[in-house]
Length: 426
Image 1 (tube, rainbow, N blue to C red):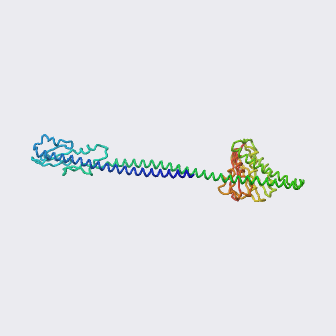
Image 2 (cartoon, rainbow, N blue to C red):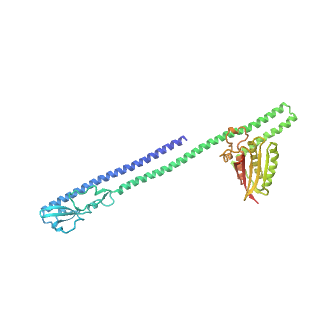
Image 3 (tube, one colour):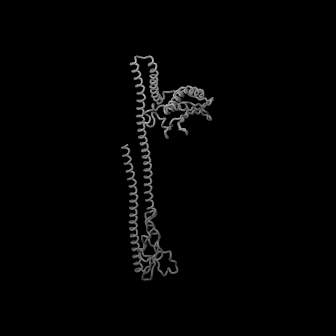
């Protein structure tokens, strides 16, 4: 458990560091590319303005040194220039959509027209920089290209952010998945430790129950033998003690047989027959045999058994289960107050048998746990009640493997109800 907790802490720390690292990488990448684009923007603006200054100076010198500009002077033959003309020749033309410099020459004023697509041609398409809008009309200065005209491409910045968010989501999803696995593993480890503690407690209870169940008959038999030895085999005393010794031996044999049955069930060494059984007649016979025993102990039995109900099963196994259930009712009910109701009826295609007693019932939430082997609830409260915690476990396994079901619940008026259900046959 300690190793697992250390690994969990290390993993969470590692995933947290990776997530923080990815956030930092995304921020640094965005900052770096933003700075790179800004530097590229400044460099391109400087180059273009220097180019236009050179064109402006060359054109200004040409119109002053060469009055006749036909053909145009080679010094202004440039891809950034679209033409040169006297202003007087352009009178009447709409120059609103043109981009030009006004030049003063010896023969008057000249207009140097610029190629408005030239900056975009220099940039290309899909690059880190973007042309916003080229101005129109007359330019007052040759260095007319500004940061408002050439700006970083927002799609490139957005793509960097998307890539950063994509990596972050990937790590968050992977981290969440692994955290889920950690939580699941923690839960399984916790349940395993809880089950281990439960098994340890059940083992302690089993050891206590077995030693208690073995010690009492052995001590009793030893005392009976010592008494017979001291009384020199008094026939009257022998007739009184021998049946008690036999009962104690039967108790020992029953305990050992239960333990052996658990082993055989776990190894599937027991075969269950599926013979046709008149459950109504068998249950009436069992209730009749039980009446005398219960009356002798100060209790009473009420039977309500419907006739003609048949099932498939092993009658020896069923009788053994019934005896175990009756034994539980007698052990947990106050002496001389047992009231037991045995009922059998059919519900659709199902035979339903119920054993109802007037005992203390079962604690809430223990309906299923009482069927676990060696489980008897609170150890201290069960010390005075004989038993090994195997009766209900064996009863459920016998009934299940015979094709039936068994459940426990508390009655509304008090006591416990054990229900056995089987598939009815004709």
